[in-house]
Image (cartoon, rainbow, N blue to C red; front, side, top):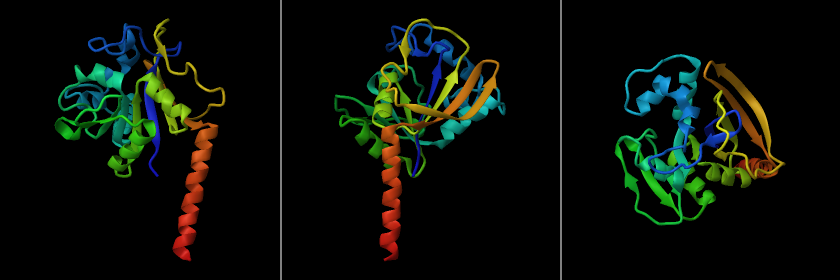
Amino acid sequence: MSAVFASLGMSLDGFIAGPNARPGNPLGDDGLRIHEWVEEAEAWRERQSMTGGTAGNQDDEIVRETFERAGAYIMGRRMFAEGEVGWPDPPPFRAPVFVLTHTSREPWVRQGGTTFHFVTEGPQAALALARKAAGGNDVQVCGGADTVRQFLAAGLLEELEIHLAPIVLGVGTRLFDGASPDLRLQPVRVAGSPKVTHVAYRIDSPRTRTRQSGAVQDHEHRKETAGA
């Protein structure tokens, strides 16, 4: 089964966005400083319909890997509202995007294979749609913080990669505010460059373990049924 993952930039003091985030001020005051490293990666610039950048180094390879593994995306309404006014056309996703919202809206079709679908039934419904649309590839939960927290709390997020920038914001939105003390993160990769440290975790929580155990049991049951 495809994995569900998030890949987020973070400051040393735990913020993934600055204060006053809104359309026209994406990621809030000083929040873009968290992502200065990625602007130099050729893979990121390609997805922004830009030229140039550095190819082949560690940062570029991680960005490219993240784009290539995602067959569909999930994001919250606030992230969509911030990006709607700033993303190029084609947007960087090049795949279906499912937006969690309380307000119904017709799908928004853009160039390059990106269509924004608006889901009012919650994270599990969005994930079911995203898995189907991903065609066996992984599903990326883009953000914002509240959306990632919802997936963590529900045991729906299996992997988390933090791109730790060597800056201090002091104020803003922290990812792990309100997170359960039962959440366990198992490091599976650490890679660094002068401008960022990439730390990938496998998520181990009671709900994640329950879901994984159920998936294994269901798989074994199907095998036994097929062989009967």
